[in-house]
Image (cartoon, rainbow, N blue to C red; front, top):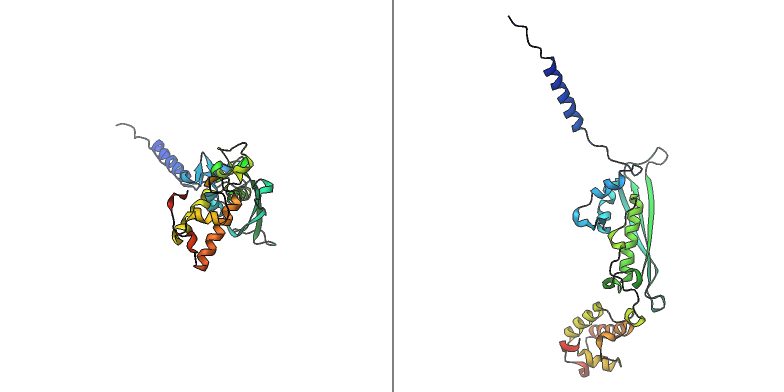
Length: 249
């Protein structure tokens, strides 16, 4: 008669397997802003289309801000400190401020922890991609918000995608910086077509040189748009400038 088989090892294996499974089922600890893993954790919350060359977009940081910090944003404002002007090379400076409070609260003396962070950015032709250089305020506002979000999230060694410029024109002449923009041209064309206005005749009436429409100054373009807008508001276009032609530009 043989000796009975021992089942201790099998039971031990079963117990060990259960312990392993229960350990794997435990929720992973979420890093805090003071942990070295914090930056990687925050960036992992972004989707692929919220990154450009591994740099987070401002839109993406805005989306995950409240999620990552378990907070509620109560105010998000921009202040244009310096408006673009011919004398400052069309430089814009914007400060963006964020006010938020932590949802998990604080200690007994301060149950709600309010925080305020801000970021500043200045933009001109020398630090902006050529295609955006005619919109320095908008670019500066986006960059300033991105910096405020990064500061609030306490990200390390991370730059928002909008803060980077790849196609900068190093030495544009002064006239190039202050010429008419594509947006102005398109807006003029829309208004002129809507009111059946001949743009070339309008330029003659305003004493603006029309030999090369793309050499019109930025300020003259503003004057043209102002004139078109006045005609639209008054709904009374003089006959001497009627007859829209699409070939004007």
